[in-house]
Length: 405
Image (cartoon, rainbow, N blue to C red; front, top):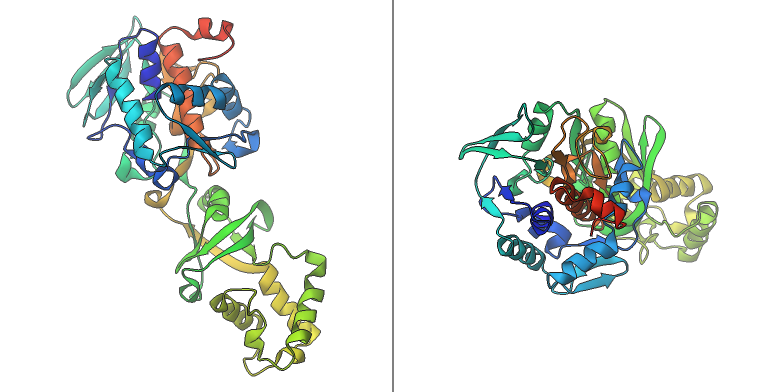
């Protein structure tokens, strides 16, 4: 929709081909239904890509301020929540509505429930698009078909086939921003617990990523924002047959060097109370029971009887609980994909294919995935805006004016 609106505003005759029964369904699920439009903190480490500088080069062409100006002009009043930007309505539907209204207002032709089977470059330029509703001759084509995450909302991976059919290399898509499934049967006891925690993801013994935030424990393993942030590394490593483990710090505010002393002082303070009370007022009771059980502490013990060795084992569970990662949840549960069309085959200044003049690629179809917080939507807005502008033949003029706005 962003690409279609931009191209139409530039004077192009635009057809938007949508294989779902309505446009923009996936927007409705973003930000837990509130649509986290973008984020004021926009740094290179917010994105993952095999070409690390690519995402920020794209965003530099249509940045956060330009994005918010665009949505303000459509009637959206943005609301800043610590850098996370939402519509003031707190309704993703309102974002979809203003985009849809603008598409209609500009006279963009929209073909719904229309399935593209092939895109063929023509000998004298332009493209033939073959669909189940007929053939369409176009001067330029923008592929913005999404990835494979949340296929029920339209991202079924068909865009990868179309890009691959045009000779583009597709890096294997895998689920990202997704839950981790863990080995063991203790998780059923822990299901439903939410707690501040640090998570360190180890791949073949080497730290691949680490995060801190609200961890959610499920009956099969780990969820929550910090888990989502590291999940793409787990997905890629597991796909490569590597050993993946997560180490969880349930008291991340305790300094590592002071932890043992603090735990020892707590055990002394609690004196004759049963060891099961060691974490009362400090941790969720169900979580405390599991940590104590894994440390080998006997329920009959009293707190003051805990020796240094036993306290060290308890501290090891508290500050470094080991979760063996068996798999990530499937695409149906993922918010985005890692992998996609190789960005080395796309010009970040125009989003044009380096293989076929007149072919443009945008959004999650590319090998770019952002962390949680509006980053994937910002990349969609930026890449769609640039692709629409340049596909309409306005790229050079826009660059001379200092941006795609």
